[in-house]
Length: 411
Image (cartoon, rainbow, N blue to C red):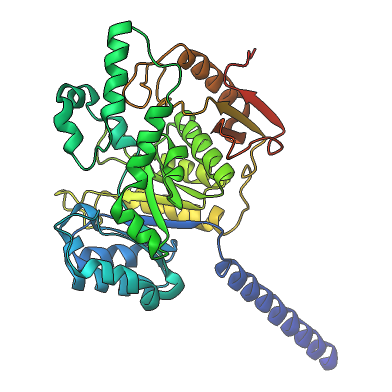
């Protein structure tokens, strides 16, 4: 009888050990899964203490820290920049560095720091975020004000070769007709990016470059950026799907990398929305195949929140995304099945039916057709739709099971 009890106890002990070992193995496996996506925060604070506090808060459910110092005084402080990057990488996070754009006032240490940063941080240094909204900002310039200034505007180094555009606008005002195509405008925007000396310097030193934008991602990539983040807003899933379709289509055909950065609407500045909405958009971007899912944490306002505009709801949403999606599931719609092909060089903003073309021309007769077809296809395919341009250098044939040309008649 004692032997039976002893055998039973031994068997129970073995089973308990086996279950414990299986649990530990499962836990270790779950915690060591390397996610296919970079999840992080774009820090917009001004001190080392703020950065380290944020890193400590998010390091267990993110793997990327973006030092977004281009907008503030932190960018000129080499010691502070180095301390923040040292701390972020020591906590296991990869880093992307934004120190602003190259100007006459750029500190002498910045180029050397960037060129040597690979050696210092190894694979943890992903690259440099350079410039901001390189297509969006010129698109939304006061172009008519520029042209009213006439030849004086041509002397601005950031507005090279404006004369052909000015002549086209003069001709249109005389004839009442817009140009048949927009190749001149497309070339000017392309030159604007390709002649950026600061960006070219980074590329010459084999530094991977990042930026974010809110329209015309196709042309950001043509302007030699390696990775672009689409700026998406809160809970507006339909609009966000349209942005994702454009940026993923551009990245797919041009063999580039894309992600999303969640920011706020101009109607609700410095407000990322609810945690639930935030989580929904993170999952949405991930399922679409985003390589980066970022939260924009700027500005650090005077509300007394040591974490900038991020609150407990937002941190919980990030943790939930990391624990339940980024480290546990494969994206569900990373390979789109349909594509909408827009006319070559047709730089229409696509934000609304009356959006401008290249920021200069009013919407033409093509715009309402494209708008209608875009809305119909997004309703039909959702995240399974890409939007691209008809460009022989980047063929779309054979890459999608369903192809829709911009003026195709749809039910």
